[in-house]
Amino acid sequence: MYNVKDILETIRMIQDEHLDIRTITMGISLLDCIDEDIDKACDKVYEKIVRKASNLVSVGEDIEKQYDIPIINKRISVTPIAIIAAATGKSPVKFAKALQRAADTCGVNFIGGYSALVQKGFSAGDLALIESIPEALSVTENICSSVNIGSTKAGINMDAVALMGRTIKQTAELTADRDCIGCAKLVVFCNAPEDNPFMAGAFHGVGEPDCVINVGVSGPGVVRSAIAKYPNADITEIADVIKKTAFKITRMGQLVGVEASERLGVPFGIVDLSLAPTPAVGDSVAYILEEIGLETCGTHGTTAALALLNDAVKKGGVMASSHVGGLSGAFIPVSEDAGMIAAVERGALSLEKLEAMTAVCSVGLDMIVVPGDIEPETISAIIADEAAIGMVNSKTTAVRLIPAIGKEVGDSLEFGGLLGSGPVMNINTKSSAKLINRGGRIPAPLQSLKN
Image (cartoon, rainbow, N blue to C red; front, side, top):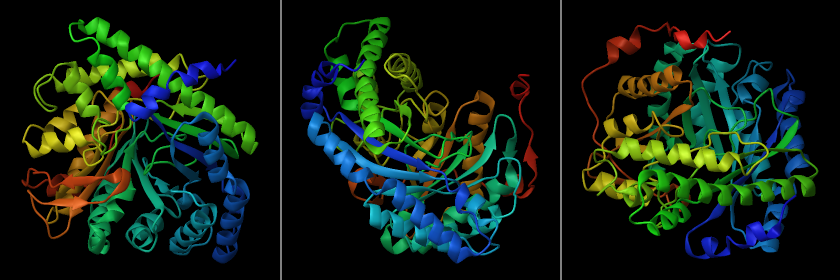
């Protein structure tokens, strides 16, 4: 079924155009680790993760060597810890430390799942987890956290939105000595998927198998290079070029996922066929949009070009994999995309334009650095706006904002690695406090009544 020639033809893409498998992520259910004794529960969590994932990194490295395919990250996602910690009645920070021990033992880049699902309200353990996020992310290195505050079916939990504004600000303050890195590992979702392999939002949904392998692919540089070969093509032809390229990229992800599944003895889940950029020059979604015909990302026409790209990537990728899931589309994180950074620095790309772009692409306002004196209610209002886009359009949206404590517009934060660097972006400082402090829940939209 899988012809190695389909993969070997991508060698040039790997060498010259930054094509890679962004992540192999093992999802692990921790439901059988629940115990009212928090120390016993943490021991169970550590033991199960290590038992399931001890060979994840070595298997990934073996596949890299066999097929000469870069696999940038090996990651783990787990059942939302708010569910596991609820029975203990204690602060979940001990679970964060147990997850960190497991990450260290297994050698993975990140573990995601320090999470809570509160789209319709708070259950036992949810408030404790959310309130513990700043501390948990300040005392760990490889743990990622996410909170789902809304959905098309449930509406938007505005009490959770208000709480997350304060949580993000506190996380930035507690990690200010490390360029506020804690906020780079914290994302707020609407319509969060249960099988997302990408951080910081990965968690293992309760509807997932006990253990599963999900793969995230990447290749913005490949898509840009393909489009560059057709300088005089019309838009229909450009869409076709993107579809064909996405097929090749996703086929490689399918092969890697199946190989990892067989070698680890774990079911294969999905390929997330997202275009995930990096700070490397050329490996940029913004540069794809400029290749399509924009002088710079952020100018008029950017949203239309991004809609074309996102749709064509999905249409091409879905034909190449037996199961597609996760987020699947084009990511537009600012700090992780050299082209986006350049567009912000030249004044062509604003927060308002990024919000418009999120209506037609994957995820949302991602890895955006804002002034350190931002009010928590303003953070909450930005989350509410983005959640509304996701709720009304029945799509996943998210916010990963980083308040740069002690910095202002014109400054920047340096994260290093895939997280890159982020210029501090200008924000609207007019107050939204009254809206946020009303609390309650924005009702689900009419399109939620599909039955």
